Image (cartoon, rainbow, N blue to C red; front, side):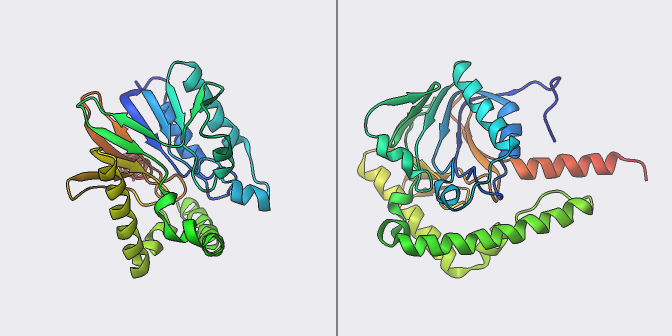
Length: 268
């Protein structure tokens, strides 16, 4: 799946990614490494839950693919990309270092940020867990939900092992299951409305967030709400083109398309 050195890299003005959850077996950091190697950008926003401190406290899982992703990100920072890291609830240990200005290996750590697009729109960039009532007011419930979610990701991993052996591309079973639960759909809607309201309160044009692992771009009462998704289930990122146009990139879907094209091109 790796990008060829002969393939020109796509140029973006800005890239936003979140919810990689390094330290978990469900992390598709190999997909993210492949995506970041396929493009260049002026600014890379890491919008929280890049490292899963909750999981690492319970058990240690860290392999070569995790190290490789970190090398790519640090390499981007040293190569001139402005890398901004906004901690989330799973990597909240980094929040204890804020609000002081801090830079590590060329990566700036911030509580949140305001990004101005090429066409002049001002967007609030934050992880978003501050507006998730379960995480904010009842952390023990979030931890219980985290355990159930881990179970779904285990099923997802074995589901995709079977698909790979059958010669089929990656699909997220856990993401599909979440979309079927009416309560989850309602919670997502409340979350999106709350984030849009915060951007409006700050006098901004929109908000970019992560946290709920649900990529979305929509207008909410004149405020642009964008969730850049995750790299556990959907493998999505938000990109800004040079003219300010914003686009959600579904990296897993793009690779499914190329996979099917290669299969169709093979002789019968």
